[in-house]
Image (cartoon, rainbow, N blue to C red):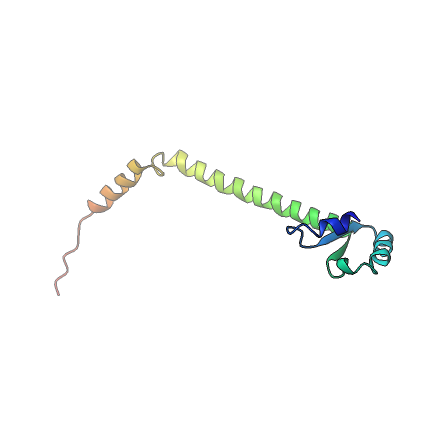
Length: 107
């Protein structure tokens, strides 16, 4: 009954039953005759949910390691070149570039 009530909510796009294979079959057989649920009720074995969770968790850990590595690279640059990320450092770089001798090319 609660499933049917939830379908009246415009934000609900579908319903997912997450459980073991035996319970999925029971829910499937009981909901088969309820026409408002047809096409809206999806079934997902809880073991698959755990697999997806573990995969996402692993990806998240890898992303954190990448961010840590990038942060470490930026820290090393800042240590070796203290003004690298400041406007003062950028102006110094610009002054160094403009003080280089220019080449006069004769055509």
